[in-house]
Image (cartoon, rainbow, N blue to C red; front, side, top):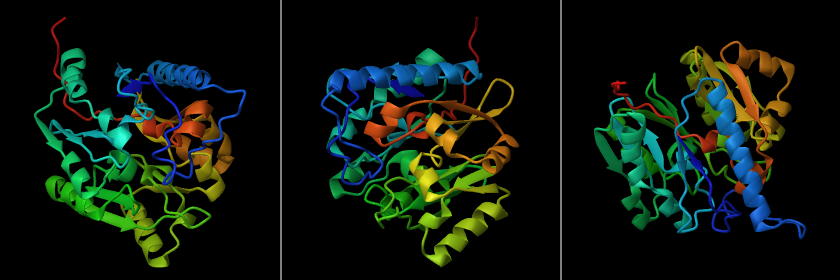
Length: 306
């Protein structure tokens, strides 16, 4: 599921917690120019994923109210194989209107997915308890483990509620950038595929937590691809494994791909085909990358009569 942006721009309400987001718009640049570049990048990524055989469900953002980060839907919605859809509490007030229940309905009407239950965690916002979907959580759906780094956007109480409802076990840890600031979303410092895990272990400075994270990934059969701070800053942790036409792919930005060394590329391509796309504008001004743009769909799909 992808949301084509209509009002993409720098979001001043997210800058305080997202060190990956840049706000230095040059005098020669305009808001409209940023939007047009972001739109081109979005369409290019959607096209490349489609060419790789990924079923891409694209919805248009609405013009009003303005939603500068609507292109990052994985923060407000997750879907599950039993037909459950979950909506999440968002930190920035101007991101809360990204939750659009009508899109859940359209997943069924337009694409044939079956939704049986909708769980809405958004009331936690009234208590300032936030959990921003698969930005906050890395879900190992096979082993029922959720990995999450503590941050203002990942509250342990909401995480616990998620785990209780879905029968997951949480591995919670602190992850910080070079300056010691909490990483705002877990999905910029690690990603999890069927048989691989990409992780910036040096950002987890507590040795006990680092060892627990490493041991869990290895004991569940994942080949670990460790990335550096520099690679994380190029969004090498913000990739996503997807089902392609007849094999798995791992989608990432061109900046992430360019940051990887040959050994890391070889490790990933043992498990999936790399599909990369340049999305510099979205990364620079939005502070998120390819994984943030993709809300994967696990819902059962109903066969349609031709």
